[in-house]
Amino acid sequence: MAVNIAVLIDYENVHWSIKNTYGFIPEPGKLVEGLRIQAQQYGDVVLLLAYADFDHAEFKGLQTELQRRSVEPRHVYSLSSEDGRRKNAADIELSLDALELVYTREDIDHFVIVCGDRDMIQVIKKLHTRRKKVFIVGVDRTTSKDLKQFADGFSTVETILSINLETTSGGAMVTPDIAYLIRKIDCMEQSRMAFVGLRLVTTRILSNLVDPQGLVSRAINDGILETYKVPNPMNTDFPTTACRLNREHPFVQEILDTGSIGRSIA
Image 1 (cartoon, rainbow, N blue to C red):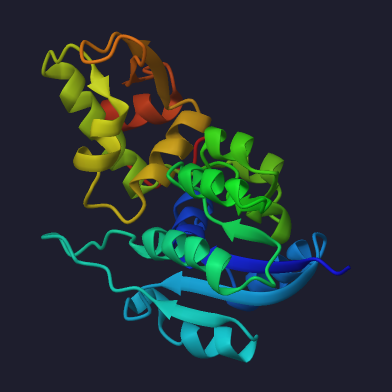
Image 2 (image 1 turned 90 degrees about the vertical axis):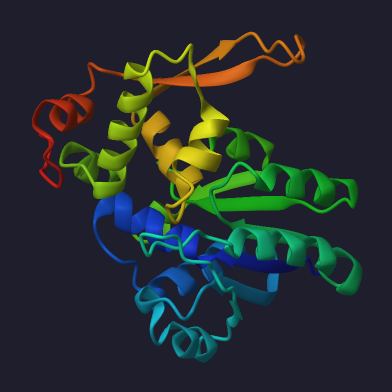
């Protein structure tokens, strides 16, 4: 019996993760067709959905391009913050659709979800209770390590887009978002806080960014941030995850010593 696959793409997550990590905008056609081929390894693709705020200038004309390739665009309006940035709400809509499809599309056997946020773990758990497998495709340097472990399989957007990790990692760029994160964490550490909670960083300190969780995941994966556990007075069985700057990292030293961004680190 054929296995039917639904592909749900957090397009905003992929777009901003690639742009902020590698400095270019992914070509929609190459990305979509690559994802389709990847999903076909698990079964027959019967549904492709892509989520984004298509009113955003970055995604002008994208809806038509997706429809031409038999991908159904799902417009998700994102509220703008005071500085004009928009927070990614696509992952929330994607999560709700995934859970709804379990009951409305009985022909769908498994899911390929294209995202990188740790919050998707709860969706995976729910789908597993319905005996659905969930395969994650994400940008390697920004995808949560925990998410990779919970998925039934993980593959990288870098492979789909033919990004050479060995080549790009040697000439990585300090992007404005990474510089912003470094300065924010440094300010908090200098304020003599007992510790900097990781959840505080992603939900409040960086809440004005498009993809704060992806940014923090990248910083952890690249060694810019280090995580550690501290006692949780509210529940001793579940310690709090804290983070601190790795002040030996060249990116951290460059930003805090010179304040410059956008230069290549050899």
